Image: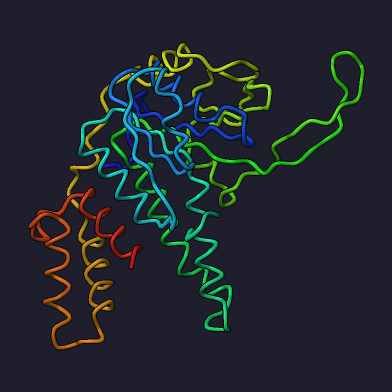
Length: 296
């Protein structure tokens, strides 16, 4: 039997990034889109309580995340949102995971300080952690809207009256290069709160410049719900190769005590996967174990 199948349009979950400099309206726009999609909304706030400022817009729940902005805090919040029955999770923002206090750039500095390790080896430790965070987002059962700060610069431009003025602009994202590949659609907000689209696999917004409203969310929801039901990936049985890779990784983790390494590895994996034995592990269990390894 062939490994290939006929391509078909399937229902999907939203993977939207909203980028822009401070003050461009990322949080506000994310909430409007979430209200347009409908359902139960959660907001993960890394912006010093800004998530509560828009409570007049409608009902949503907030989880405030404070420094240090470790990978495990993000992953735990995503899992909590999934287990609590939310439909949409706004992560505001994912820049702190990369460049915030205790984020991955801070970890890189920590690993390379005092010549404990070189930069290349440090990235070898950081990349799996970042990948675990990406996997938690892209593999989530929820609609995900992630805001990303852009670096702020000032530029002289000619306004509509032909006069030169200085405006704050966003150039480059405060995140790892290539983060935009992980999203279906990327909205870039200006200081005038208008959106241009740098990536759009939906083809809905190609070439448009617009202002975000709840209708933006409703249009996205219609596109997401078009097609056949997607398979339940989270319940797919884990492969033998995945199980062996993780078992070997936990054995290595506990090799400071070789005599008890196997027992400790099995005990840890059983606890994380809710008492399951390896023969019953699903893809979701594998993700949880990989997240645990990345946090150590």
